[in-house]
Length: 138
Image (cartoon, rainbow, N blue to C red; front, side, top):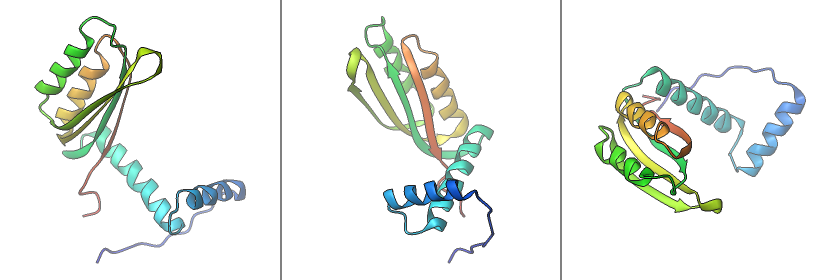
């Protein structure tokens, strides 16, 4: 069983009221579960940016498929990636744009390299990543 630590937090009343509404809407069991998820997300994000070794998550990107060779360059980047690309899905959006989501795992440096290549591809208009360290609480 995992050890837990209890701590007190002072939060403005209006903010905790709004947080409680989110907890109810998203069906968390209690504040502790919601706060633990927020902390876990922030720690994972920090681990991603400082270079944690093994991560799993997604790279989400929006691109204009009418830009010459953008599709081929994106596919080439994903196929050549040193990260493990588990899946890659693209769907059409409004205004003739494509949304891609690559699920990947592996070493942070390999994932970051793939992310940078996608971001710098001509025709990519947006790129974001979301990763978790599956060993964060071990």
